Image 1 (spheres, rainbow, N blue to C red):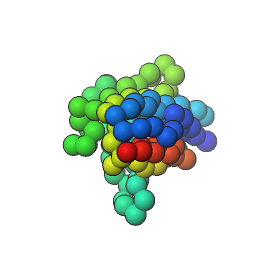
Image 2 (spheres, rainbow, N blue to C red; image 1 turned 135 degrees about the vertical axis):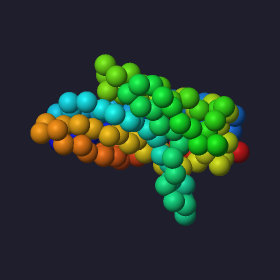
Image 3 (tube, helix red, strand yellow; image 1 turned 135 degrees about the horizontal axis):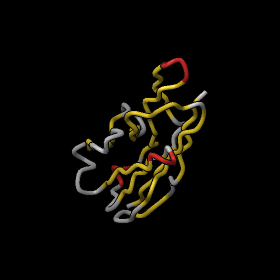
Image 4 (tube, rainbow, N blue to C red; image 1 turned 90 degrees about the vertical axis):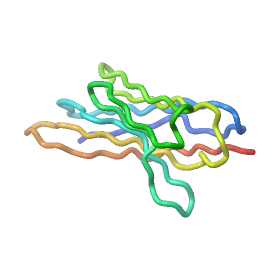
Length: 120
């Protein structure tokens, strides 16, 4: 069984910064992509940023220039540094990972989410 545990969500004023963390644990053989998605009230879940095991990154247009995704492969952890936060960034942020487990099975795993609230 594989689990993703997020942390770092908080209430912050517009213009502030937050750093989210997501640690994967369990019977993991390897992890391919790890990323962050978010879901605001009344909206669909959307990609924020993702990174591969080779450190290639993809950002949404809203995240480019403000957010930075990074990864510590030794710790099976992915981070999201968020700067210049705006009220529109308010959402539940979910971690996502593609994980290879025993038996060469590939699983897509989601975390439970962490709430980011940006006040104006």
